[in-house]
Length: 142
Image (cartoon, rainbow, N blue to C red; front, side, top):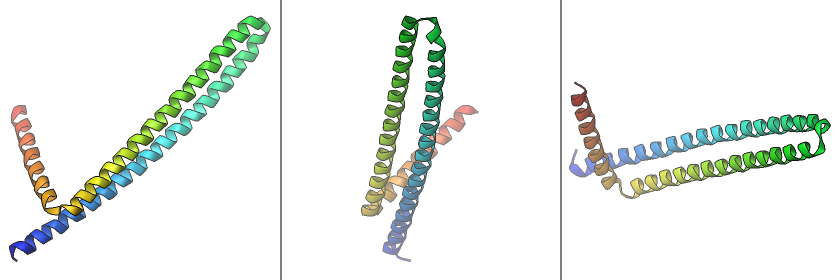
């Protein structure tokens, strides 16, 4: 096997590994999105229960006086709105992070496809550095 065949085989392996890594990143992003959606759903349910409980509390206080009821109602409404604002903001932030992760994964995969030789060299260098770090940590533990 000559050098160009070895390089070509290595480039193909690196490209395949990058594609698999990109696919795995996509799967992880999908799983994370599902978890975020589940969190948002549960947060919505909690918000609904909070609103129901707040409404029940408000209705019970009607008998104690109009002024007290109005103050409590305003506070509860503001708390519900603040909770919804936080929930929406958190959902947007998580969605943006997921989009950025997917974009970064796609950029890496495209770079590896376009530059398999450089990518292989970088992978070898990173592997060497990682092995040195692991070895030095093991030596420190002893």
